[in-house]
Image (cartoon, rainbow, N blue to C red; front, side):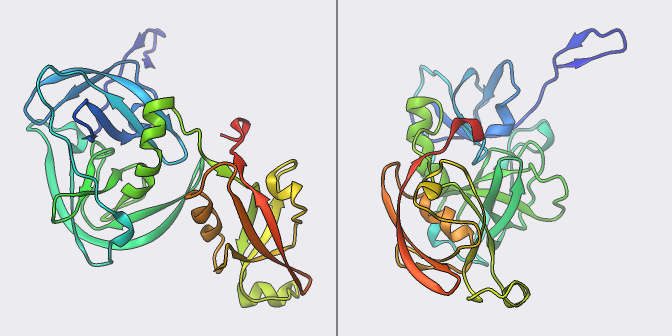
Length: 289
């Protein structure tokens, strides 16, 4: 909604894209496409128009599920595997840039990076980077491989991106789709409650750290699983469940693949003394969302 000089309120139309993932009419899109919408109209590629309803949203991954009801059979997309993508692989972005007339458009490019980490208001997201053009209106549309499988959900949320595009990996979406449809939000998001920074040689030398590799714990949330396990600020995380840690993102990436009440083993280096800590994963607090 916007207001004119006389403070009269007028609705504003916005456009975005999405992909049907289920013949029942469930559509995967970006959360920022629909989060401020009062009414949703969905136009399919055959020109039919449907009323859409929001089924579930997740700000952390910038994903959402909406639903349409159709008397006719709906075609759904096949979801691929974003974990097996390779840099240089050809991909195709589908969407409706800027809401232009004439229906969806298609742009092609290659995967430029698979681990592009960008900071958003709800945390760090690791995105697929491509040189396929992705503009406002493309947001929520599919990024597909040459087999026609959806391997990402395009996002045009990054205003400074020129000549490059980004997409949320489809495997991130796969982990939460059922939860969004069933519960309207992500209920199985485990959390340990630490903030960490990457250790390099310069940092290790400056602070006389006992290791030049790992993740240095900079902050611990009070009453978090890490706090209850007696992890401390200044501890160095060297491994998690046997996986050597060279970047803090590896910690969150490993944890998001697990479930609430799973247990993990973290190897800590505390002033040169190494020991293991078992941590019980708990739900991400609602007051931190």
